[in-house]
Image 1 (cartoon, one colour):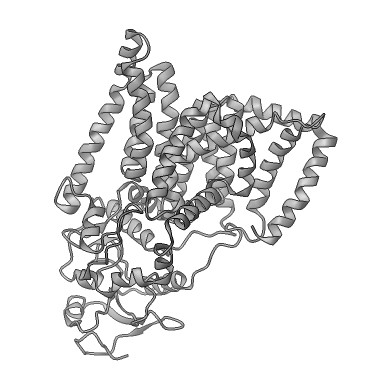
Image 2 (tube, helix red, strand yellow):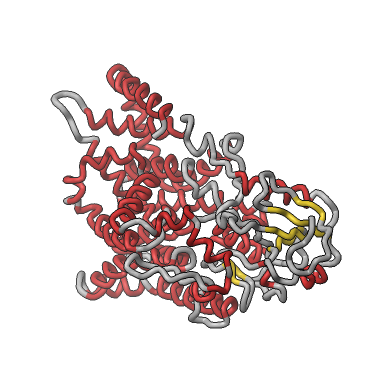
Length: 549
């Protein structure tokens, strides 16, 4: 926690206490008005989506439209560009070796290795003018879905509070809206599944079944492993209710209600198989699995051995594991890795402010209203701890479950009293005040987004080249000690018609075929490891990959 933020919180805490002490009747009127407003559930759902968009747009002067930086972002953007052109994948390029890069398949087709859901969101944004518009819309859908899920589990007032917490914590203060990595898409899928379960068990409606199936379909095409872990406990509960509990009539009603979900899941399986076949040539071979076979076999779980990268990618990929930013995690002990994941997950979804309500944990453990969600969270959490790599968006399907539990924790906290002092009421109000204050506090990611010289330089050069009427080929030269996390060679879906094509110079390999193929373009060379990378006209005729400058 930054120093300025601590100071701000230290000032706001006594101010909140004074406000409560001297203005409690007015505060109570505000809360009662909020409780009445919370009864308008449809308005809350729509409002959550609208507020998430408007609030983030208002923050654009402080946090502009993000510039991609991480390998995965460029891969997702390739998927978005592919889908925006009306294709599921792209034909392989005959000179694919010069375009080889992280998280992208070159053979048998040219495509992202990732599931298609995030790419589809980015494609929608691209068609509307910018891929980030798709990110913004996906976050709005997440906020609406989380609000709907909360309403299925909690009274309207507390569902409204949980929606506010999710808006303040995940929408405005997270990388889910400030990168192209995703998170909101899987969170939307998880919220639909979680929100549909109690409604389906109470009302046996086809609409809820359809939303359950839609949520599972989104998870299958965004975070399939984590989505499966989340859906398994739901399937167990539905199976028990269908086979063992209730009258025969209720079981038949549930069976009929589940038909839409089954049909949606059947269509999802068919689409996934077709997508795999188009990308990899095998309906049962996922693009990510093929990518691991071709380049490196990254372990999925912590007990699996680390297998060296396949030599197919040369230093490009073997260097990834030799990079200090990567190897420092792989070298950690199991206990250190587990602790790191717990810390990162708690920091992202809760932070120090939303950890406070968990002082009521002894009451939460025995709370029947959310017992299923607690079991589900522990079940999924254990498996997430066992996965080798972890980022907070891996746990995105659990977003709705987390904020339902947090809201219930605040509900318990609010009942606390010490003598005649309503310390729980004060604490609950202070939590909301501090969350709002954190958005505009110095040192937060929103006010001071992390600047990275590499991605800014790449974007600036691309903008300069697009401002000219010609098409361009940029040959990127890396030094032997190049930081592989700063990858310049990422391209659009159409490698022949793109305004800019980025290609890597391969030491010892003839570059003449590349020059001949793109003879109608203006050719540049770029030293990616220079202090201030700039493109310079290509002036060499050497075909060995060591051009003169």
